Image (cartoon, rainbow, N blue to C red):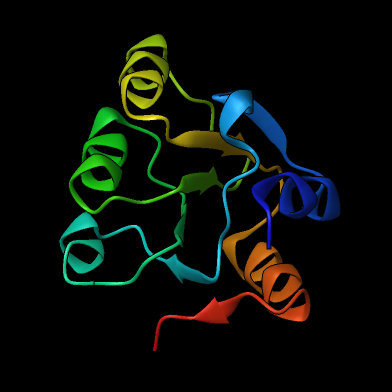
Length: 114
């Protein structure tokens, strides 16, 4: 599924890297523990997290993630945006819970990692 379709369906707000919305996402992983994210090896992966700090974007960079959905109305910082732009990582803000967005993505056919 294209990131653009995904964002429209969940009602998220794209914060940066709109030019990368044509990228495909097949799997999603929901976690606030970045050490757990680093253990996941999957192509076309989307991270769902409530951890809105530079560590989340650095983890996405190291894991070659396509995008990050920040849940619970968490806001991203300018430093996070700069790093995401350097690596074409789409940052999406979502007002609802991790559980809710995970369910929406699952109903769209986005697969869990495990």
